[in-house]
Image 1 (cartoon, helix red, strand yellow):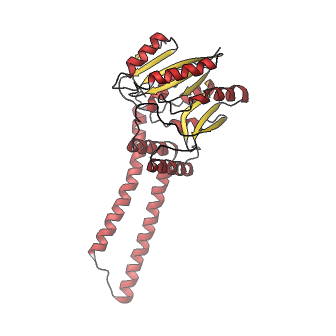
Image 2: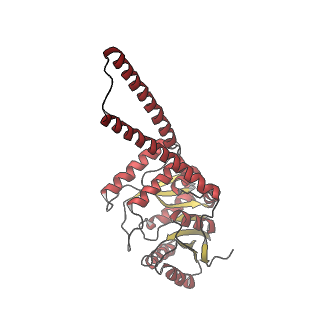
Image 3: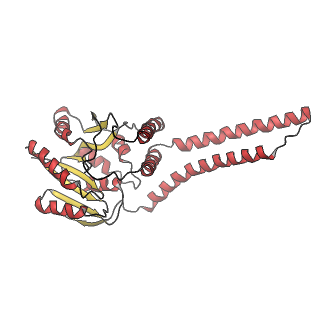
Length: 311
């Protein structure tokens, strides 16, 4: 019997965990020749999520869990789940049931019968999502696809079914600053995309606000593109050229018309503008240096406080 491992990151999801398990068991019942393995990763939850997971693990020996010593973030949770999965196929799925779990049988048959290495899911609509958030999300994918050689699929979710070979390839990249959507694309492999309409959470509230998504977008761009560094260099050259032309204009004007340039307010405005451009470019360089700094430290991606997984 083949096994599918479900990596389930959880952060303050006590309300959704039992609903998620019931839904997965219903799907497992319809796939009689496939065994489900659940790997719940408690990302430092402050509610009773871990207690709820412990109850499931006592009732079902296929329920495994890893509890972090603190909140390390979803990327670390996904990596921990992939690292501890034992299935022939592995999927990452959100516990809030926003991912279309009803597509799991189709995803399995696409890999099993059609020769795909991965079947991913992408949203074709963002119904129920704030308009501003949807706008910036679309803009992010347009920008990063122009900057990066690694293709990012607009609307792609972390939810995807992968072969063991693909998962092992992803685990070879042990970088601290992780952007999994990019890593999934970077390793390659034959991928099929299924489309679906946006689904609302079954319970609880999202843990991603606009600021966290903005930081996540910066992580994605800095992880898979050096475009911002090139942009800052080109911007510096452009302003040097503009400054040279301005100096040339002032010299010619003074020699021909004897009219020295005056006006400190305009000079102050120019100084502030150029200082802002300089700090902006320094900030871009600083982002890349900070990423290098964290990688050089070689700290663990996550720290386990409690688990029922026996190595």
